[in-house]
Every structure is written in C-alpha cells, then in structure tokens.
Image (cartoon, rainbow, N blue to C red; front, side, top):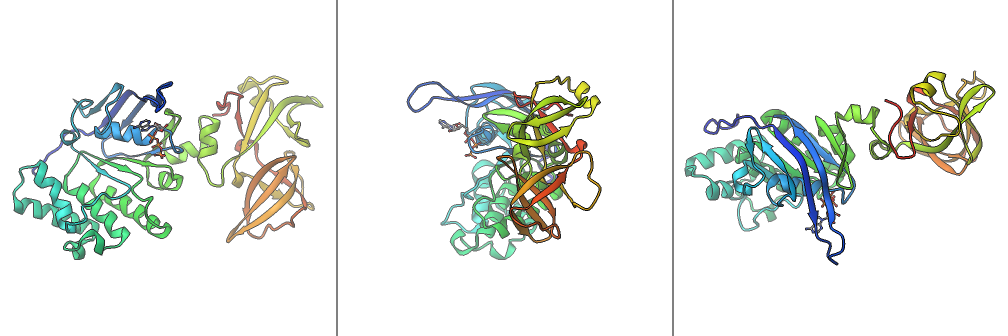
Length: 384
Ligand code: ATP
C-alpha cells in the first residue's frame, strides 16, 4: 500500500455481460459500442484493452470509470457492486490522452486539487502525498511550474502523479501516450511499467498500439466491433490467436494470409490455390484428421513473416518448399523485409539482413507445418 491510512480491500475488477448502446445520430439502428463483454482483471494485474478505432475500448473504460452508464451488465470491484456509483465513489483514477491538467495551477496544485475536493485529508497530508508521488514520477524539480512551462513528457508525469496521489484501487488509462512523440512514448512505456511494478495497482489501459499492448500488459484483451475476441498473455495471443481477426491484428508486420482449398494430389492432401498454380503445400494426415478437413474445403492459411525462410537453390529443398517472385526488398537494419508475390497475393517475409535477393527474382521459400495457422471461412482457427 502506498499510503497507510487507506488500507484497501480486494481490488479484483469484474465486468459481467456489459452492454452499451448509443442511439445513432439519424436515430436509425442503435450503435452497439460494447456487446456482452465479460472481463476479469485480477488484483494488481495490468490489463490492456486493444483493438482498432471504434471497437468499443474507450466506451468500456468509461463504463468502468462511471463516465458512461451501461445499458446492461454489472461491474464489481472486489465484493462491491459499483455499476451505479458515481465516478467519485469508485476509488479509481483516470489518466487521459490529453493530460487534462489545469493550466493556471502549478504541478503540485494540479496533483493536490482532486484530494482537496474529494477527501478530508489535512493540508500536510496532501502535501506529503504530492511529495511522495513526485518522487515516484521524478518531477520534484518542476512542482512549482505550470503546465505551460513543462514538456509533454513532464505533463504526462504530472498527470500520472495526480492519479497516484489519489491512492486508487484501480488505474484507468485511455491512450495516455498517444500525444507524445515516438521517442518519448517508448520512454514513458517503460516508466509506466516501472510505476506499475512499484505500486502494483490493478490497471486497465486502453490503446490501439500493439507495441504498448505487447510490452506493458500482463494480459491483452482484444476487441473488435464491441465484441471480445480473445484474452491472454501477449505471448499466448501471439502464438495462439483464436481467430483470423486476432491473428491479423497482433504482430508487426502482420500475418500473411492465403485463401486455399484442400485437395488430394498424388495420394497426399495438399493446400492449393487458384491464384498461384505452383503453390501446393503438403498437409500431414494427422492435421487433416485433427481439423476434420475434407477434400474441397476452403481454408485460409496464415503464416507469420518471421516463419518464412528463403531456401538457397543449391541446398536441399525441404518437402514444403514453394516458389515466389520477389517484388521489393526493404532493408530494416539487421533484418530484410521481402515483399513476395504468391500469385497475386502479397506476402511479407522477415529474413536475415544477409538474405538479399534481387527485385523480380524467383526464390524458393519454406515454412514449417508447425508454424502454419489455418482458419475456416467463418474466421475461426482450426489449429490450437
Ligand atoms: P477509438 O480508439 O477511436 O477511441 P474505441 O475503440 O475507443 O475507438 P469507442 O470510442 O468506445 O471506440 O466507440 C465505439 C463505438 O461507439 C463507435 O462506433 C463510436 O462511434 C460509438 N460511440 C462512442 N461514443 C458515442 C456517443 N457518445 N454517441 C454515439 N456513439 C458513440
């Protein structure tokens, strides 16, 4: 606990069947911003809500904060039902994208103002909290400065400091780094992780930036169209995406896809595609059985750029070797990105910087069956 006078109880945050609809501006169909969402954040967990613009992550956060009233569903903090409490009664502190600092107040006043309004702490107690938070955020030097006299990164530190002084059960952060430049963003990412390690408060963090999600979270909550797609550790979600949306959304450069058909050629099952008649990928019998595939089934294959390797022409060609035309080679320092044409489908391969074919060259490439993801026409995965 940060401050001894506020011994908080369990702060597991449990969201059950949360629905939030808005009336469309032209009063046609309702907009379902959050669609029957179930999420549990364990005490002290750093949970990142990730998804494309409009997927409902901010609305979810605002419902947790009490800034939106859910259409239905419940939100509990520990054993307390908080769905209908005012924001002030929720013991949560929110950090916004635009920092939301009062321009006419000093950093110290910005940090203590909320305490003055919502608690009966004495002036000395408030000052002690501000001092402590300033030490954590390393902003003691600028406590007397107004927001106009500090840098963007320092504004963000003040905003975080203001959240810390409230000693909340839960931190809510809505894209807190998106107004910072790339370098500062990377720095504040590690800063927030350090802060989290230090004070260990349950944190719900909204972003559309998968680097933030992958590096900061204990678990990622991937949303699309108001619907929960998957919850899991960054590593698990990356390796075992539950559907094609998650597979394509997580990972940079993103997973390559190709629409294929299960065919039986020369007594073995193969994946073939109309768009590239030379493509013919052998499927192991056990995969066919496990995934209950039959000849003629449509499946989309997914291969991560780093799973593709270029097979030198003078070496043994593994059974899975295919050919592709190199469209463009993009040097990325230690790696090269090869943009390949598989028929008219464009794929990216991430290979060592010394693998440097010419534009227009036909190359051989392979990927292991273990690295192959298969998706059914409805987008669900057929490989666990
Ligand atoms: P972004 O990253 O762009 O903020 P988001 O994932 O946070 O997106 P939300 O802001 O939660 O998404 O919005 C989800 C959906 O709800 C969108 O279709 C949005 O247009 C709609 N929406 C959000 N707030 C309102 C509102 N006050 N009135 C009407 N529609 C709204």
